[in-house]
Image (tube, helix red, strand yellow):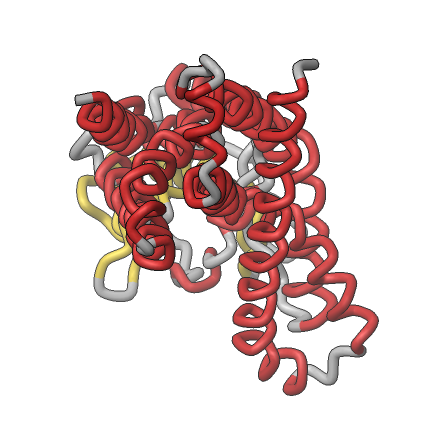
Length: 360
């Protein structure tokens, strides 16, 4: 490895890990303050709280890594420029592209590492974190959707739900088995889709069958439109569906979305999450493209602090745009692929424009 590469890489890694530790510390502090009342109200032992935050660390690292890359690239280039080292490199025949190449390579390695964490480690630690918070600390049962759907029991009824659309509170693939005291099925209802309205789940089309408990013979068959189903679990009982989605990696979401679509259900939100598993880690590379131009523009005019504030502000705007476009995807206002990648494309074009402006 060339001595120049080692120097730039060492400088970048120092700033990157410092920023990663700082952002992670702030995140942990804010999250601890938000959850402190829950820990105290439920008399949770501190060992359990510590275990919760240890399992949350991979999620925190994954979320703050793009900002750490942004700040690391900005401070690396700004320090080289401010100390006159860039001018010395240019005088020695080393171009700007050659100086910046190690930073871009490191950013791509961070993207790969972040994707690997999201794909293999994050689902495991997120599942443990949710189990600790909602079952061991709050002692509340979880309701979530696995690949085979969810089985629920409500009084004398067994309910199977294939999937839940959390944004619109829509159930898909509902089957309700009503039994008597001898566990004989006396009624069966199925609905392809049901929406929660005015305190009840309303099926677009409900198929209802009633059986003789003695012989099992069909006594009644009805096909009803816009009818309440015999299921009374409110939407708030499904509040952890999104958390369960965080436990699914790209491959699992791809398989689940494909299966739901094959069965005739709406898989839009799952496809948005699936594409986001690839798009979100790539944000680290976008942050380098955004951070370096601000460093080159401001570092030589005693404006490092201002340039750093602007670059971090642009990074926050990026995350806001990403969240907004993802919500559009959930609402089917944008195709899933477009919703997941639009922010990356827009801000990459912005960064390239800033680079081209620098060259001019």
